[in-house]
Image (cartoon, rainbow, N blue to C red; front, top):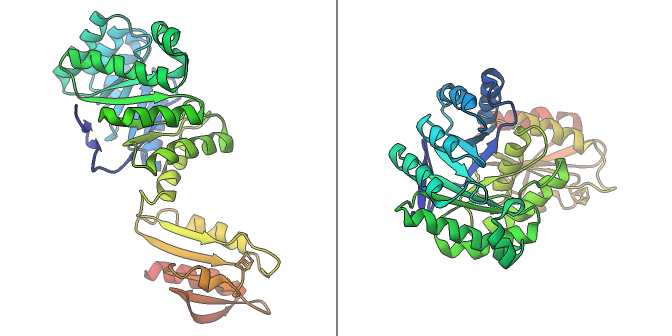
Length: 344
Ligand code: SF4
């Protein structure tokens, strides 16, 4: 059992930061559009990207794609073990296959041999929608079935002397996903977390945040993928926000802002929106509090580096570590805060 795994230039597992993953949704055979999306994912903060590879023609394109970015790429293989073997030889940093449809032991052995020869790990990616028939006949489709499927297929890789393994067992049901990973923790392998097919936009983000967050907060999970319908950049933004919310990503500007109530006498939302844009690319820990009024503002934001709160007659106060240091007109808040950010 390996408690860490190297995927290209990224190490995941015990003691290492939780890595963010996503998956391209361009045509893998289309070199230009896939490369463009990979570069966009990387600049959004994606650590590892996966591509579905469905033909030998795509494998040929992938030989160029793996050289087009410094981000490690993972080949996602369903059904055809020969594609997995070809991808292992094509420069991919990891192979993900679905044990429910890859075929018999001899085929798995060929994939293992290719990954061993290339020094790359395998993700055993079990999915509730494609469980082996014998497993679902015995255990159904819940957490027990997912966990047993993982154990069966990890056991097969171990039988072939292969331990460079990442495990995932995803369900579209949040509770089932959480229960499954809790069962898998004792295996000791590196865990890739995700709620599969979690949906569209906010609904999908919330399902993923609850499922992934519940596990990470208990120290379970080494890498995450938020699975959303649509532009994969949104998966990366959501994943980064999950890590930030849990304190697992610290090098950013956190803006704490109050929900406002009738005590707020200025347009806090507009200021927070502008500040959010302004601080988007800050890569160091900084906390700014944006509060609607002085009644609770500075006190509620005691641990912020600095902030502001609306006062009477169109004025606002600027505070540091909970102490008021300056009074300004409301329209001077943004320039004042931006100046402090620049000097920080
Ligand atoms: S900080 Fe002031 S304006 Fe904001 S919610 Fe609290 S009381 Fe209302």
